[in-house]
Each structure stands twice: as C-alpha cells, then as structure tokens.
Amino acid sequence: MTQALPPRSHLHRLTAPEAFWWSTGIEDTFITAPHPVTGRTLDEYELTGHYDRWHGDLGLVAELAVPCARYGVPWHRIQPTATTWDWTFPDETLERLLDLGVDPQVDLVHYGLPAWIEGAFLHPDYPKLVSDYAARLAERFRGRITWYTPLNEPRITGWYCGRLGWWPPFRRSWPGFVALMLAIAKGMVETVKALESVDPEIVPYFVDATDLFDTDDPAFEDEARRRQDIVFLALDLVSGRIDERHSLWDWLLKNGAREADLAYFLDNAVALPVIGMNLYPMFTQKKLLRDAGGRFRIRMPYAGADLITRLGRLYYERYGAPLMISETASMGSLRRRLDWLDASVAATRQLREDGIPLVGYTWWPMFALVTWAYRQGNRPVTEHLAQMGLWDIVPDEADPLRRVRTSGVDIYRRLVQGGAESVGRLSQVPSRAAAAL
Image 1 (cartoon, rainbow, N blue to C red):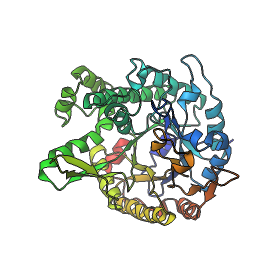
Image 2 (cartoon, one colour):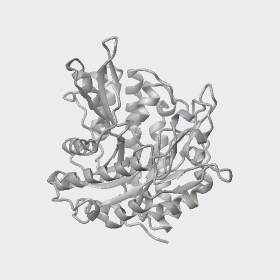
Image 3 (cartoon, one colour):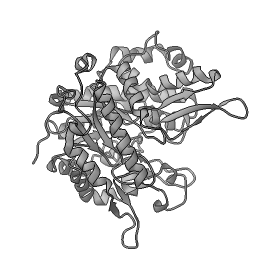
Image 4 (spheres, helix red, strand yellow):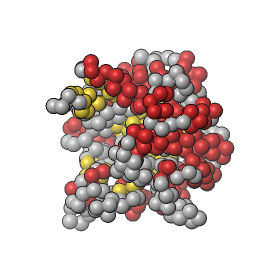
C-alpha cells in the first residue's frame, strides 16, 4: 500500500520553485432533503452512478497521473442515524486512492447534512456533531491522509440555505444568511481543532467560491463593495479578522449577529495554511446593472482568464497564504473547455511569474455533473447533464451513464506530468506566504 507523504511537510515546500499540485475531483453535492414538490434529492454520486462505479472512476483519476485529488465523503451515508456509523464507502474509496498513489484531499461536507440533524446547520449541536464526525474519519486514516476541507464553499452553502431558502433549514433573508454563516464558520473552526487534535500533520484546506463583483453604475458601488466583502466573510470569520474595524461589523450586527458570536471567532481563530479558490468563467464574474425599475440586478458575463489573475492578487493581498485553484472548468463544447484550460493555465503561469504563490490547479469536475435544477424538475437525469469534464457522460442503450474519454484527458495528463514546469517556476517565495507556513 502506498503511504501518502504528510502535507505538513509539503507545506514547507509549497512555494518552492519545483512544487506544483495538479489535482482533479468528482462533483459531490449531497442535498438529502427531498424537494417539497418533486420529492427529488440531489446526491451527485447517486445520480452519476459513482456509488456503483467508484472503483473504475478512481482508476480514471489515476489515469491523469495527478498527485492528489479532491474527494468528498457522504456523511449522510456514513452516519445514517445519530447513533449509527457505516465506514464502508470511505474505507473502500479512500484506500483505493491511496493504493493508486493519489493523496486524497478529503471534502468533509459538501452543502448537505444527514437528514436526522434537525435544523441542519442551525442545530445547536452542529459544531460538535461535525467535528466529531471529522475526528472519527481522521482517526481511521491517521498519518496517511492529511488534506481535509472542513466544508466546501461556506458562502454558497449559507446563500442557498439561508438567503434563497432552497436547502435546509430553508431561511430566506439576510438575517437567515448571517445566522447560517456564523454556524457554518463555527463548525469549520471546531472541525479544524478536532482534526489537529487527532493528527498535528493535518492540513486544513479552506475552499470557497470566489466571486468578483463589479459595477459601472456609481449608484451601486457601495453595494458591489459590500457584496465583495461578503465573499470573504467565511475566511475572515474563521481566521479572526472581524472586529469593530471590519467593514461588515455593523452589517452583521444589524442582521442578527451578536457581539458574543463574533468574539468567539476572535478568541478561536485558526490559521489558513492554504486557500482553495473555486472559480468558473461562466459563474464567477458578477456585474451589478440597473433594471427597468431603477434597482440593481446581477448579470454573470462569461469571463476571461484575467479572472484568475485578479482573484489571485486579491486573495494573496488579503490573506498572504499559498493559493490553489480548487475548482475550475468551462461548460459546453470540448473546444470551449480546452480553450479555458489553455487560458487558465496561462493565467496561473502569469501569477507565479509575479511571485504570487499559486501552488495548485484542479480541473473540476473530472466528468460531467448533474445540474442542481434536477432536484426541482421532472426531466430525467440524462437531460440534466452538464458537460464540464475531461470525460463526458454520454448515454446509450447499454449504459445511460457511460463515461466517454475526450482528448482533454491526454492534454491534462501532459500538464500534470510536466509538474511545475507546465506553469512556470514560482519566481520567488514571497515573505507573506513563507510566514503563513
């Protein structure tokens, strides 16, 4: 069995000229609550057949020759009731990755929770429940798996659960969003504490969606700035950056946060050893425009690769930590996807030439995903496939979820085999990144 090198040791080499972490992943959104009208849930592993095909799918990961891969584990299956644990799936899949020589970057929570946690993230015991689950998993792989994402995209989780009301606990207000963000962030802090108590070599890998808000309308400049500050809210909370001087302090108190809630994060701040940026050319750019009634609306234009250079500089200036592109892909034709791969790798190279420690790149998802609209719709899974991967899912009579290899596999594999040379060596080790290690 291959034993993964402990990434705490890797952290001291993250900004070395020869270091770069190519990665991939399989979409792992887990929304276990049935839609009130359609009755559908949204478990991507089930919908794409991964629960049955995991052995072969993980073989595709190895085919790319990546040294690591983001991989989610389904908490709702591991702990189907408050007192029942079933470790079969993570034991089999994570061991398979390790046997293949791929370091798992484990996604502990990807939007959804076990249905028995009433109130979801607002359950009063949620921080304890999630940290206990994390510690139990870490103990099973102590010394062999040391990359863990406490919770993928906390802001998007807070938005869909607290502001839009699509997912449990179905809040639909800014106070709902704030309540969710505080609970989610506290769960992340307690998870990090629990992981590090099991194994001090564990690397918390903080992954969030990285929207960029812009406007050409002076009337909406303040709103654009506030929305941009909200993009950083989760990381600012967990790293203890929000006090009376923070731009969102008054806004948070206005929307239901208590000073005691915010003091918890100042007293329990955790380090950000590496930050993952999830970004997509079709989703990440947000433009505030005036609608017919004079109010603002948000448009998402397809962005160029300067998206990456802008975000990289913005995040490094704010946090001074090594960065990874933890998710990126384009959607649609293979030509469009490969054009984005070329452009985004070039932007990665530019940031590294500028001395920004962008030390990893993840093409996500590895194969097609099922769009979130499936849960509230009535069309079959095959009509909700978003082709974003290096493999397509192309149904036929024999196999409705057939994985079809594209030329992107060989192109990405060549990039991976080139290591850091594919993106250029980091020009220097910036002092802020070195201090973060």
